[in-house]
Image (tube, rainbow over all chains, first blue to last red; front, side, top):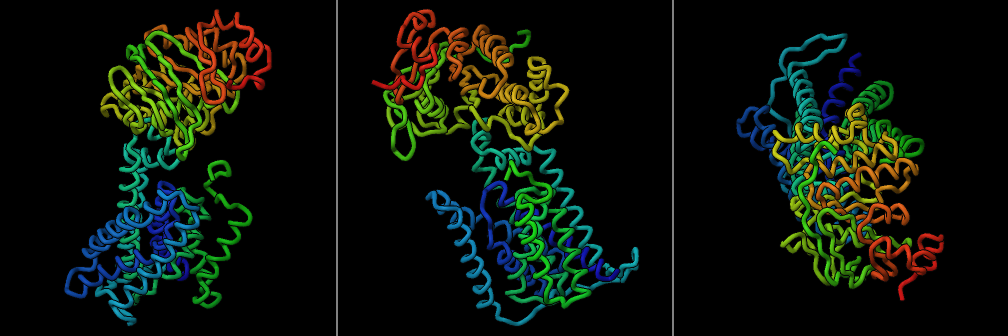
Length: 286
Length: 252
């Protein structure tokens, strides 16, 4: 049952990260493999303020702002210029991979290779449904739940959210309906970037100790969760994150935790082989 | 038509229009004038540039030469969202709805440029016009039948009360009875109530029945035009479009 608790924590963080990741993919058609490096850079910005005495929970705001600005800038100054040149989609994927390496190892050059950790009290331990969860973990779960409900509200009930879904489904028709798709795309990068920054900072808090390359393999988990739910499907991302989070942590209880990403990778391979459009996606839309 | 869905029309004019992709023209030197209260149809064989012509009018395909005007406004190479804001409603041949969105959400996106308080009222008006959509508001557009989907595509465009309707093969893939109803009841109805309608249609006979003026496109140019009753007397037109020999009709 304790591995179920770990799985729940992993799933919660992964859900926020995957929803942002899949929103970027759905609305802007960019498979942003630099997502992990934006996550860890955001975490280090949060840590920078935390190490100088700021409350760890307040630093989440700085992580979100960092993720939002970095993601928006990546799209504006890196991905969009490449997309405008009408190159093959793989080109942008390779560019994103390059940005990921520069972002991760650039950060390492600045902060060094040592492990750091947030100054945050784990709080009282609670025994819930057979799981032992600290006060800090419960707050993280609550934050994740609130964020996911807000994303649901955004996508279903707001003008912006509907415009995002319309742009994702058919950008030309959205423009013919009067939607300023460029503005929608920029806003999507800001929102998904904020989710990326939040996920990165929470990931660092939850992990305990972290360093510049800690999120490097996280992209495998993200891809697995996204393809499991269906590429470009925010609700699929939530489902995929829950499944991958639980599967990797429960498997870690039986085999070495070092192989967590391997389990995620196997799920990814299985989905790509048998149902590449995911559980929530449809063959037609993908 | 009990509900006024469109504004009184504006004149849509294309003058010496050339348009295409990557600097290569698909349509060349086309002159068209669509006026309020009239249905102007464009017919022609596959690959003659009909869809490209319509797309260039609404800002989807770049205009390489000539001009496009709506009323007294030059809309040449204007972005599609600005063209929509000027009252030009465009229904593409395919991909004409947002499949993952519900019928109601599709209509809401159609009314994106309206004030928020007006959207619900406008949806009511559109549903009065297409009552069949009333019972499927929460259904995803991707699950609709061909006819229902086309009604939704029209309804989406009508949300902005367009003064000019640009319709690209609205009857494609529809059963003949549905196609006839769409053309004769709805599309002709728009024009009869003062809208300007520019229609691309594969079913030449049906198009002629509801049109006031018809242009024949071949090889990217207007090769023949006239009132339907005159075209029906033209042996070349009859041979090419009413007698099943469309493929042989090419630009001079």
